[in-house]
Amino acid sequence: MFGGGWMIWVAAALGMGALIGAALLVCLLRPIAFRTGLVDHPDARRRHAQPTPAIGGLAIFFVVILLSLIVHPLTPRFLGLDLAALLVVIAGVVDDHRRLGWGKRMIAQAGAGLILALVAGLRVTDLGTLLGAHVHLPFMLQVLLTVIATVGTINAVNMIDGVDGLAGAASLATLLMLTGVAAHAGDDALTMNFAVTAGAVGGFLVFNVRWPGKPRASVFLGNAGAELLGLLLVAACLRLTQETRHPLRPGLAPFLLAPALIDCLTVIVRRVRRGASPFMAGRDHLHEILLDAGLSVNAVVALISFATLAIGLLAMLGAWARLPDAVFTIAFAGLWLAYGLATRTRGAKLSRRARLTVELEGLAPEAKCPGQADSPQEADRATI
Image 1 (cartoon, rainbow, N blue to C red):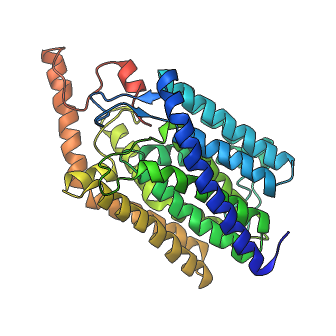
Image 2: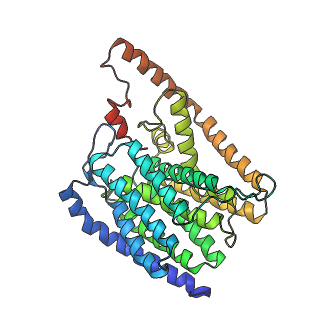
Image 3: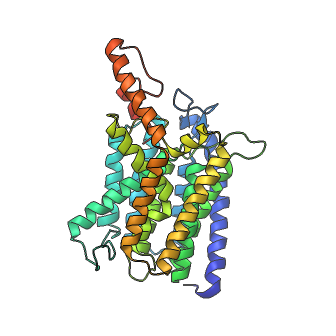
């Protein structure tokens, strides 16, 4: 479309326009959020100091859709991605406003994955040379794996959305890597599309990150925003790993958001093992472990975002060195195992707490361990 060095400048200009547009939209939506009740109120689980508008996701959504029209023709792929994004945003907004429940949200996320696979044509078509050669997966397995990848990535982003700036900053790190890969591949439209998304996230972060003299976020991403970012990231990874004209191999995809994915997998496994719902709120996430270790909120955001960027870039260097796909699988499993071992003391404490809770409930129904939900409704309100 533009080609050469001009592509970088145009992408940068669109990214800056998206940043400014998202910031302006946040300012316009904040008073509307208070009037409509789209506000996250403090409670036993949400420890922020005051009611905060949860409209960051809406600002990102409108900016990405509007500016993407400039660089994308109205193809089935583009319309399918828009439809999937609209579905998760609507479900997220309803949940932010009146609590939809994790089951219904999972249905919406799976529906978005189906739309990506069947309408947008974005599917997991092969797993690289993990089995010694490229094997084209059967269509139904492609659809199933795409839905699993979509739901998994959405919930990984949603799970790290626990402190000011974290989900947005970690997603921004991934988006910057994807923008660089798309530019290297010479895909002008994709480069500018990623730059727009990164710019929109940056505009939101202006209000979500803690600055000197600004001790707390003035706007939250909301479930709508966290789920939108997860969807956009999985769609971007499918574009860059499942099409032969792009340089990323399928085995690289998990490394582009490794800390969030590993934390999500570890939390789910540990909660299931101790008999708890994987969707119940708890203080067993990576950011909460770091906070309890004494790090500040901004230090946690910086550390996890840097780790996201570093792991992704190291994986790209490995691909450039032509390491076999099996090495990436083993490396990711090793990272997961290392994280599990490093945090096993915290997991053991939570398991003992869960057993104590069961014993207390048998003696006195009103006894409740800290962090335990009061009711199935409260469990539904937990961040997935």
